Image 1: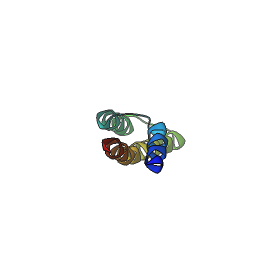
Image 2 (image 1 turned 90 degrees about the vertical axis):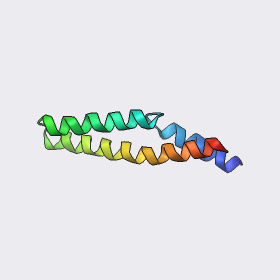
Image 3 (image 1 turned 90 degrees about the horizontal axis):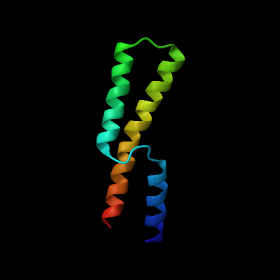
Image 4 (image 1 turned 180 degrees about the vertical axis):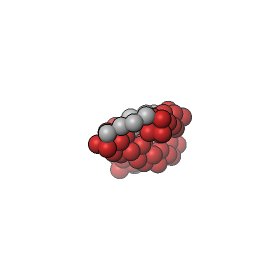
Length: 70
């Protein structure tokens, strides 16, 4: 039980958004910016990295939701 609580706190602290809808909106917004605007290569890499981080955070959010169910 203590291990689950520690995992829950760690996962929650790492999440930028607390709902899957907000994560999806942020990913869609960033992808739209990549398609419609011109960026320097360095800036584009940062945006792609942010998209990857957000997509991975969806999985973490699912873990938080499942741990909260217990």
